[in-house]
Amino acid sequence: MHSHLHTPYNINCEEIMTALDECHARGFLHKALGNCNDIKREVNRCLAGERYARAKRNRDDAREKRKRIEKIWAEERAAESGGSGSNTAAT
Image 1: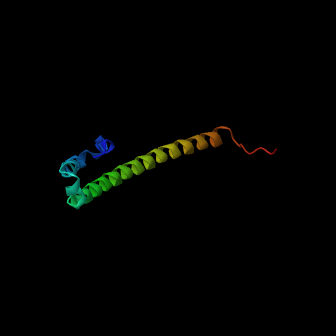
Image 2: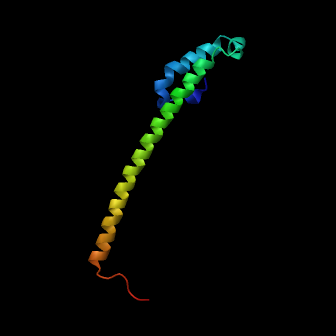
Image 3: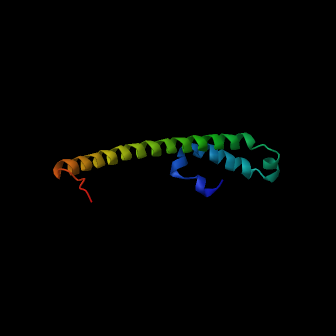
């Protein structure tokens, strides 16, 4: 298996990836005849699930950060408009 797949992000897929490594270690002919295809599909399914969960967490975190930032911006706008009177001077 590719070393970059064995990461903390994919720890839930470690067992399946190890099984695929073992299947591939049986030899080229075993692999070439498609005997590892089912395991490979399971690895792909697991990695896709992990990637989806990670992306969902990232989206949720980004939404929360955006809400906090927009709240700060709204407070700054309120302070600017309330503290200095009218900011719309004619130029």
